[in-house]
View 1 (cartoon, rainbow, N blue to C red):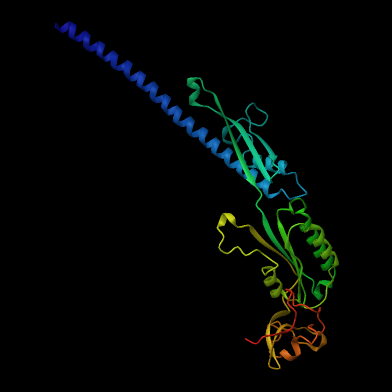
View 2 (view 1 turned 45 degrees about the horizontal axis):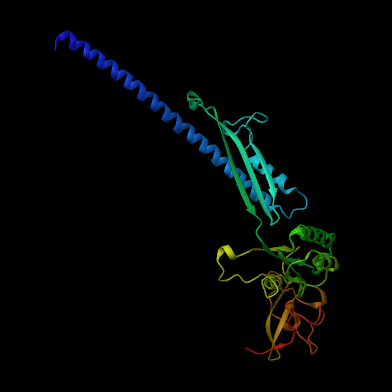
Amino acid sequence: MRLQELGKFRRDERGAVLITFTLIFIVLIGFTALAYEAGYWYLVRSELSKSVDAAALAGAANISNPYVDTAAIAREFGNENFPSGYLGTPADGADGSVQFEASMDSNSTVRVSGRVTALATLARLFGVDRVATSATGVAQKKEVEIMMVLDRSGSMRDGTKMSDLKNAARSFVGYFQDTQDEDRMGLVSFATTVRVDFPLGNTYVMPMTNCINAMTANGWTNTEDAIRQAGGPSGFTNQAGLSGDQRVQQFMIFFSDGMPTAFRDRFKYDNQDYDGVVAGGSSNGRLDCRPDRNPVSNLDSMLYRPTGDGSYPNVNPDTTGDGRSASILTPP
């Protein structure tokens, strides 16, 4: 080959390398744009998904709330978590701006869907200027068990305490008007002794409201026994041994104005065992059983012990609060 022809071949080879490099560079730009845009679109989709999930959970948590519209509060939560213009999406009112829709199914399930348009940047070089994305979130209100524990001791007579307690308790119970067939609730009230006014169950709004209306304030404050009986046979369901997905949520709602002044236990008196209540204060010459006032040292003066008819002197008769009569127990 002549030198002149060889030089021409080399110049042609340089041109081929340039063309090849240009084509590869364009492809690389395309893949870079795709990676950038795909990451951005995934981020928008991920944030939208989180928003509809949060909206569905907020709606499900307020299914029983008579003061809000479930669908409206779900949409509001969606817009709070993913507002218009978020992450460079179209502004409010613009084509492709974020939109949320919410509905409630008959089985206490809230369904929220969201859609938004993710705008393109580098992908516009290849004719793609926007990508529509959507997500759906579903949440169901989980059944609950609630034991309401109300203080009806004598101190609740002061001022407006008792009326305030009744108003708050009635309002709380009414909150579950629409779900009382699924959710379970019970009512325990306490003074010197404890009453299970309504065992844990369904269809409770009216009977519990009637019990609350009928309450009067009198006696000492037997907090410990009230809390114990809220978890007793007429209280929360025993969920020991159940897996997490089979358990229901359990809550105790406790209303009181002060510290305990009474407690219940087994006591020995005149060589007999009693299921008794110790209570104290300044009236009737009895001591205050609170340890910061006087130690429990004189059970003879402080023990409301059973009498022959199975009642306590000066205390609501016939029961210690859990259905057992206040009779002599078998010694241990």
